[in-house]
Length: 139
Image 1: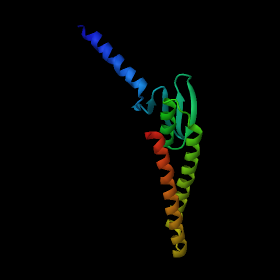
Image 2: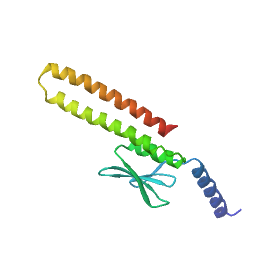
Image 3: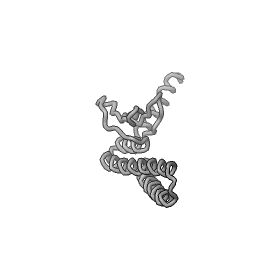
Image 4: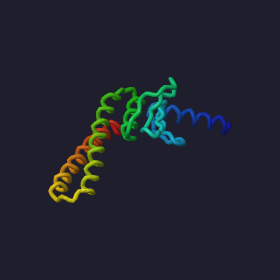
């Protein structure tokens, strides 16, 4: 048999498998999942549809961008739900940054104790939302 013919058949088998079970892979500065591309920008992560050459949405966190792209590649559109989760995670993240700064700059032990409690709540809630996002990615 011709080795070029065998290589072409093997490539066809692999490409067919990637269509059925899209695997994310990094190419340059972008992540590709089937026909979707995730690119990092100064304002977050942009998700593009290469079939229509159009931007789908922009996210703040890489995990939410992966969740949206993975589900769209499987034909499920949970974009709105994932963006709501991202908004919650962003709020808790910003709260945590604020509380860490307040703890660092405060000299009042009572205020530090209260702020540490609030920081713990913000981190716990952020992790809870992240776990929900992970279910969208890995399910």
